Amino acid sequence: MAVFESLYFYASYIVPFIFVLSIVVFFHELGHFMVGRWCGVKVDVFSLGFGPEVFSFHDSKGTKWRLAALPLGGFVKFHGDSNAASMSDAEMQATMPPEERAVSFFAQKVWKRAAVVAAGPIANFLLAIVIFTLVYFSFGREVLAPRVNEVKAGEAAAAAGFETGDLIVSIDGDEIGSWSEMQRVVQKSAGVPLTFVIRRGVKELTLTAVPAQRDLNTPFGKQRMGMLGLTAAADPADWRIEHYSLPQAARIAVGETWFIVERTISYVGGVFTGRETADQISGPIRIAEISGQVAKVGIVALFNLAAVLSVSVGLINLFPIPLLDGGHLLYYLVESLRGRPMSERAQELGFRVGIALVGALMLFATFNDLLHLTRG
Image 1: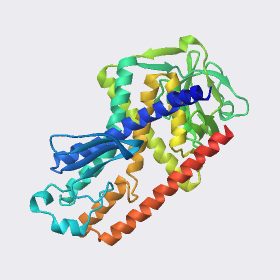
Image 2: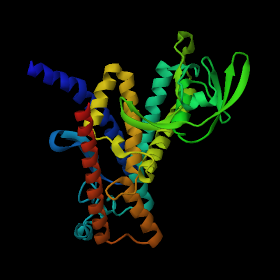
Image 3: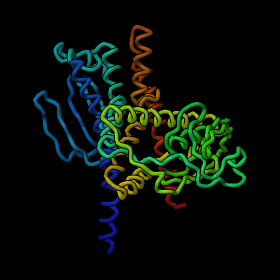
Image 4: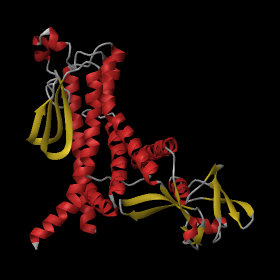
């Protein structure tokens, strides 16, 4: 019985987790790889995963492609780097033959190095847009009309004068075509007065409501958001499937990707200002749990999760923290302003600080994951 339980756990949670994370990491590193090649930099190693090597081969340009045992990340090692974090060694640089120096990462102009570094996060954003586009184009999107089924007593909507059967037409002048569109506006507007145009029978009325801030338990953890106290209509006639052309699907995909970026930035800013709690930060354990839950819904939902995670990974990597891509870009900005690179000592100190910050964040996220499991 224990063996079957272990197999079920692996198949239900670990496999979807590895699938989602591998897609996101592969395309992130592929962005670095491709732009590096375009900029004339030799790539020594492309690794999916860390730790002991499981499988590897060399391509025609000498790059070693490897699959490692620990599928929790990956890296691209460019020629001239002393490690996977693109740190360089002054002694090695001084003794490197000119022909090798020419194809080394450290010897490239600052704009080329910046382009190579930025390509990873950009690849993550593009991956999300492509996934969302293909899903919307291939399967369409299920849409629920923004019609009110119930107004909860004592909540913001009741105070504003909403009634059962009201159809929300617009918010602050922007047309609302679905219940989810209405929710997104309301959820990010806690404490902010919103002007609603609603259709009640044959009349159009204008109502003003101020969403109250609430902590809501969702399959993805506790979320702090604005709430009106409305429930959606239960009539099957209010559901429809919208199908899109490829350009329409791409436009919606860009909007969906931007929404995730905007929501993430808003959340991070809220943590620092005290508007949000840090208990929503999740690590690999929670992501594995979510992957397993989403995989039970279907492969389309799993790809959607990969798109969401890809945006998050791309955005986090742009934070100006040494060790992350954003930290490298910060160094290159300083170099372009000063006309020369920062000293090796300053860079090394920065990377140590970066390792400490990233390590502390991972420990905190894992603590949140374990806390969630014990409470669940």
